[in-house]
Length: 163
Figure 1 (spheres, helix red, strand yellow):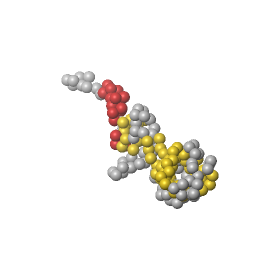
Figure 2: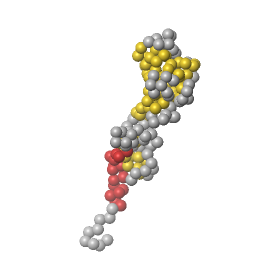
Figure 3: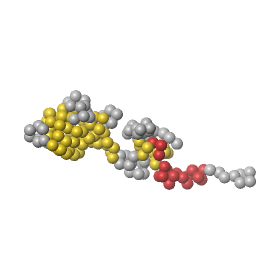
Figure 4: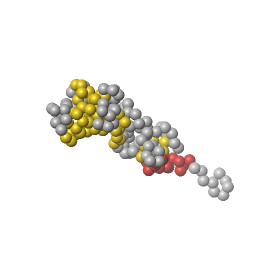
């Protein structure tokens, strides 16, 4: 009853188990990369593409939050969240101290402080709680609801030794 899982099942827990989604619990989760920054000089625009100068990782700005400093003086620090950053490596994007260039804001908008961390949103389950059937993953609850009767009807019960 196991088979291929959603491609984003690479986030292992402490036991090394991956995570996946149930087709009926909400489909595919979405993923964002949360990037801490410092030396921010230009306010990012929602929908703008940020690209790492070294790693060439890229993502579309979904939100940003300034925690300190000023944009005009190049001292702004905070967090920017980007989507569609599909080229993460082990859930990480961008490099520490990497300059981010923007499609709207231009070059050297901000500097990454640490690494960008990919975060999943939506309903996800440990792989051990998922069952693969008819080309899709289902949580055990939805699997039993959708396929339980089918599998019960396939079981023949023989009473008294005759069929």
